[in-house]
Each structure stands twice: as structure tokens, then as C-alpha cells.
Length: 394
Image 1 (cartoon, rainbow, N blue to C red):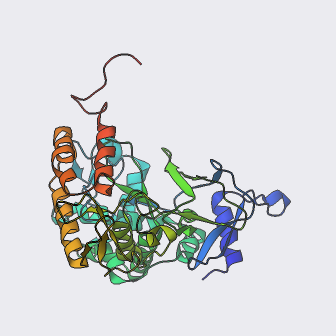
Image 2: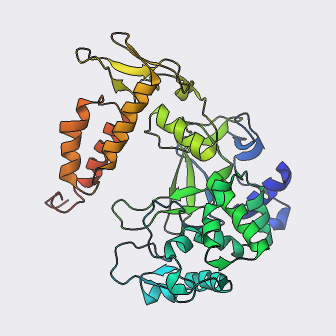
């Protein structure tokens, strides 16, 4: 494990903030320190203004996300909707065109994979498995310094964090030393990677990137930063409010508009911790009521909220009539709501609007995260979807 000073040197080099003509000069307002939130973190060394760019990071590796639920696309451009998909006859990666096949990106990917002896013919290799493992496979291209930087990041090493490599080995003989690097990359990715945002409505597979500086930011449900991506997958981290010197620079690992139960469950399943921030500890979530449910009494207009939000087995209570509801009943309702959402075609604007105005609003308050999510989806859809486009000149 690198010391904080060694890690700081490597991070500054990664960001290109080192001036070797005049010793080493840091051009930033933060440093890496031990964090009260756990492990290491980024701490402001000077006051940072709202809207100020804190740093611009670039990924050590990037590529398709590993989830089996992600729709697979071209391994080069990510395109999903295409009538010309084919599987590379050397490495089995999915491609959409000869143009993508002839890129330097595919040449490097294919060269790595085709070195391995395949246990079955290419025709019988599941291209989705190869696609799921592609991002860690790209770690084999890292130079020694970048491998050290990747290995210095915090990583969860439970077996579920490298399942894509175990599936990959069903089709290829992967050398032991390379397998160790792939597993390390998987663990680092699952702990630190960021989903790379794509334009709304674009038919592209979902990508992720391992951003080593951004990965050092700890989680807080009340983040003081936001981030966005450019066409070159660079990640710009910006302050959303003034950050005083000595304050930790944090990010939110979940959806900002998720309610507390959803955020804490996601963090526990994916990051293996339960958040205890002030937002999670507040039953009303600072008055937003994002996780609230309607009172089970049909005659009561009140909202149900957890009595002790940091206790996952806590009962819920109505703010209006005081009715207490056991957690098992709350979980049943939340599960039913999730199942209902699973039946939706999010591309069908009419169905979304009907579901929002005629169905779901009968069961949950307008403040609930599901209602907020559906409203956001409809706002994005109007003006962009065929049949709902704006008319006239602007």
C-alpha cells in the first residue's frame, strides 16, 4: 500500500499537475488525507467557490459495465440499435461495423484476448461474457505506474466482485498472473468506478470508467460536488457550494433523488457499508419526503416515515394520525412498487403518463422518489420523442 505522500505524487502525475522544471508544483486546492468518513479522502486546502472546477480526471481504464442486466452493444462505439452486428472471429467481441473493427481500440482489445487459447470455437463463445469482462481486460494495457496506482485504490475483494472473470475462464485459458491483474481490476472497478453518462435517448450500452482521483472522494448523501463527462471520457468535478478549507470533498454514490431506504440498500449491496449521514438520519430527508408512503388508513391524508431511519428494522409511523406499521408491511409495499415499475416500457410516453397520473399516485405521495423519477422522465421525453416534439422555430 502506498503512503499518502507516494499516492499524492502519483495522483498529481496522473492529472498532469507536476512541473518538473521547477521541482514539483501543485496547482490544486486539495490534498489527500486520512478521512473521518473512512480510509482516505480529498480535503480542501483552500476555500473553494461554488461552481469552481476542483479537478479534471481521466480514466485508467473504461469500457462496458459488467452487469448482466445491461444491454450489450458494440465494444468500440457502444451502439446498440444496429442491423449489422457481428462477432469478431478472433476474440468474439461484438462489433457493429468494419469501421469499428478496424479501429486501434479494437486492435488492442483483440490482440489481448486472441493471445489466450480458447476452450471452444469462437462460434460457441458467448460474446456478452467477453463484453462484460472487457473493461478489466483493458487493465492489461496499463503501464507499471498505472498498475501501481490502480492497486493503491481501496477495493472490495469478495468473490462476487470478479464473477465476470470466472465466466470468461469458461471460454479462455487465462494465465494465472494475468488473471490476478484482472481480478484486482474488477475489485477496484466495483469499488471506485463511475458510470459514464451518455446523452439522453442515445441508443448506447452503459459504460464505466476507473477514475483514480474521483475514486478517492468519499460518499455523502449531501454531496458538495457534481461531475460531468466530455466526449473523451474526461470527468470534470465541480463544487456545487462553497467548500471551506479543511472540509472533505465528497461525492454521492447513489441517485440524489433516491429516498433513504433505496440509497442505504444500494450502498450496502454494492459498497458494503450503511450510510449514517445527517440526511439518512432525518426521517423527512430535510423535508423532501422522498421515501414517504401514504398512510395505510384510507381516511387519513398523512405520510408514513421511518421512526429510526438508521435502523433497517424500524417501524414506520404516520405523521398525521400516528399509525405504526411494521417494517415487513413496508417492505411488502416497496416490493410491490418495484414490481409495478418493472412492468413499464420507459420508451412509451403515453404509458408513463397514464401510470403516473392514474395509477401510482393512488398509492404513494407526490413527493415519493418514484413520482419524482417519472416526472423527470416525462420532462425529458416531451420535445424529444416522436409524436411529442415541440413545433415552431426557436
